[in-house]
Length: 343
Image: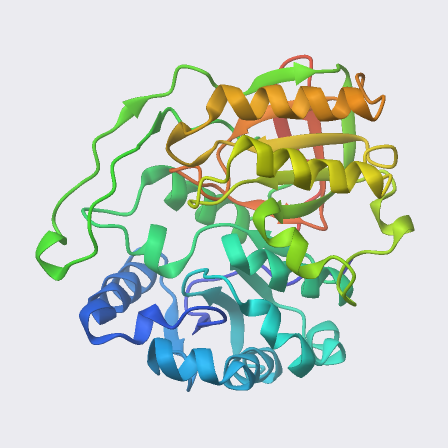
């Protein structure tokens, strides 16, 4: 996998809207102001928005080619060192016909986002580029009150530094508090809940090293059978990252999605699984039961599974480098970045 260059103070980064165009709605443009201020003043970055990123929900829904063009132009622009996604959504799969994978491969740079951005991460996988499953502009970087310390630390330590042997620790706090997106709520802060679970071992044991692959399982049905769904051999010896979205899919739906992975023989090819904290801990225990049930159905009772990782919709989310090697110590419930995903 190709490593992008790490970030430095003074680097230019681009914001893209690859799914919903919420960032361009008048009532939410204050989110861009918050994010830009923090990226510039906390991290020393220069922030630009790509030409179509602020054209709003209706325009971007009607013009997936415009969203894709922003992504391609951001990769081609040598002055841009990283690409941050505005937010997720549900239809970035519609960008696929307009993606030039050679442009991505020949212009490697940091690409970060989560949720529906999972689809774009599989595009990066196809282009052989390491990418970063992590915070979005609107949700975490422009969080009301202040940017969560856990998010800030992940950006500093994984995107700006050599993160070889860096330990991805659980967040000490999480939140199930949602503050409505309204400019009058800018100074409100989420109520914090002390983390009591930490990482949980569902089954298996041992220490496993492998490249990470995966993302938000809600999106998988949209990409199965397409050109960006990995071929059988790609899954070999990988560590599979799975998390669920804020739609809080039912345990039965998770069951169906996991059975699909089992039917593809993916569980027999990978080395282990890491699972994100469910959004607001909805179905927290039910999801655990489903993982154990499905793996037993496919005779994978010994495949190690670490649960409740702060990634994706976890509140709060860290960063997981997709395509890069991590080491998961299932015995001691620890995760390390084995080899820095940046150069």
